[in-house]
Image 1 (tube, protein in one colour):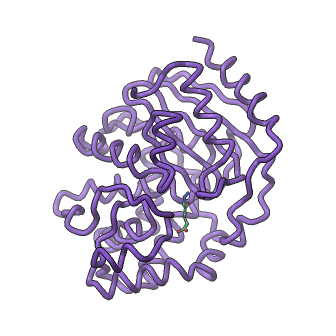
Image 2 (tube, protein in one colour):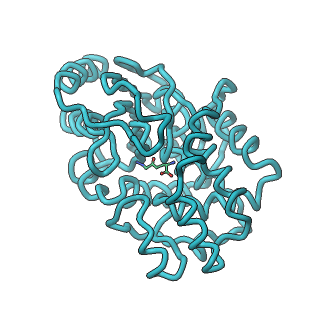
Length: 303
Ligand code: DON
């Protein structure tokens, strides 16, 4: 299959669309990103790589980081994550608060914000220097020491993230946040502010497509844990649009409000896309379309 030609065709098709969606305005630092940016990148498990557009430009990965945080939290065998976070799709927006109250402080899944904040709390408890150690984990699994946090994005979200503060306080009121709210959210805002390109994201997610062995060929996660995280990506990776993503694209994946999406076919490939204009559900509008086109043209999906 001529993957480079397929990516180029998708690039032409998708970038010609006039309504490119809108950037995430609720994080001021992300509000003014040019929606004309578009990058698409494919890394096969054989090591072959293909890319079009701005695939090497770094952007704010935001909620894409939640899958990496979950992978690191899952590697601590002493921690029973499932006692504190469920694995059911929520069918609600990623920042919804009502379910936390209704379900007594147990978030529906680790990818909605409340669930990701509980995972952040677990990492804060487990890691000696949480921000540095998490960054080192991402550098380690990719073999890329240039990966860093965008401190302006982290500060911008800290100054305006009132719903996340509300979520964290609610979790604390139910006893499902062990560290203090400010410490956990400081970690969480940095985690979300990882600044990475499509190339680096594909390298990071290679371990989910490669049975737990990461880019530098070390076993970082057991096959059983990889299976479970991929299942959560499929059912919960796109919040109240998870059904639509499974229906249109048919791959496990994770989105972020920076406009990135990463998806993978186990034992085959990782594909990453960046298009900062979002749809109403907070997922990249052109990114979703590009991935739908990719699995339609190649007939490569888990279904
Ligand atoms: O907590 C937040 O709202 C952001 N740091 C991350 C949200 C996000 O990326 C949702 N995904 N599409």
